[in-house]
Image (tube, rainbow, N blue to C red; front, side, top):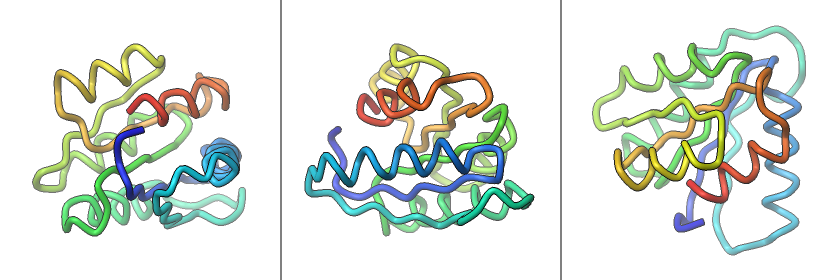
Length: 128
């Protein structure tokens, strides 16, 4: 992982995946800052609220990279890409995440929690 600051957010469908990623990254303790913008439970919420918060932090330079998670990944990707300077990429494999970062200079990783394992999601974050 090449960044030193990451904002992460999800809706209720991505909550468990987000928590799994957070736990793994904190355990690895690789010296980066992780900002969790929510949601903080599996209660139903609106995905744009959290995608906008992550994208705003990346857009402003508060963090270097963002991770947004929802069921399909599409909603958070569309929302994040509405922000100036955001290049959000919907990724479903480690290879796609690596290519999005390397060839498209993507700065927000969008994860479809209903279609990837927590392990794959973590590997994508680590590759991104």
